[in-house]
Image 1 (cartoon, rainbow, N blue to C red):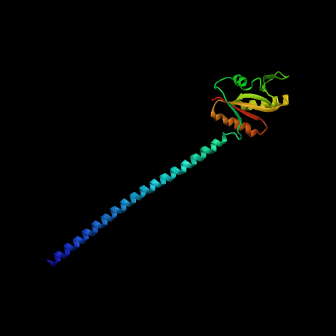
Image 2: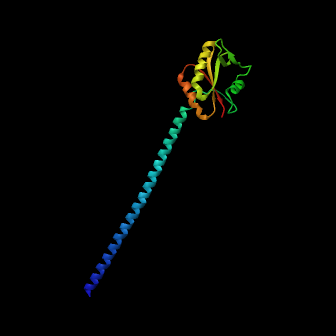
Image 3: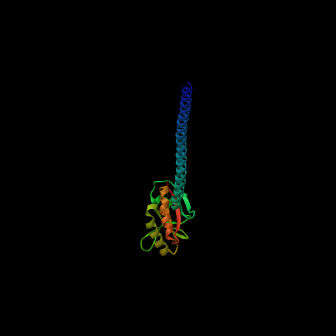
Length: 176
């Protein structure tokens, strides 16, 4: 009888220790999963924050490339019109002379007391710079261009004119 009692108590302690071991393993697995999920969540959150900050910095950097150095004189006008419309609206009789003829049969779009201004759409920026410099030389006035922007992305052409650093005055006409 005594032996049976001993074996039943050892079986009870063995069963208790096995149950405890199993419970410990289950708890460890569950805590590992929770820790992994928590660490995955934290890692994802940190990655999201880093990507967000990098994206914001990139947007800021690219926006700097298309913003003019100085605040130019701007006018907002009706979109989808011909160049002559913008010249006539901007260069009125009290401001300057439109289509001023030169001795070589070229015409200055707008001649004021200070500037020889060439009007052109933004994508034709190089042509307007060349004409403006020529008209300034022929008239003894300062060179200026009036850039007609039909889209917000046309600031990149204004930036190109700025990079020339040749003293050309830039007027902006927003036609969008």
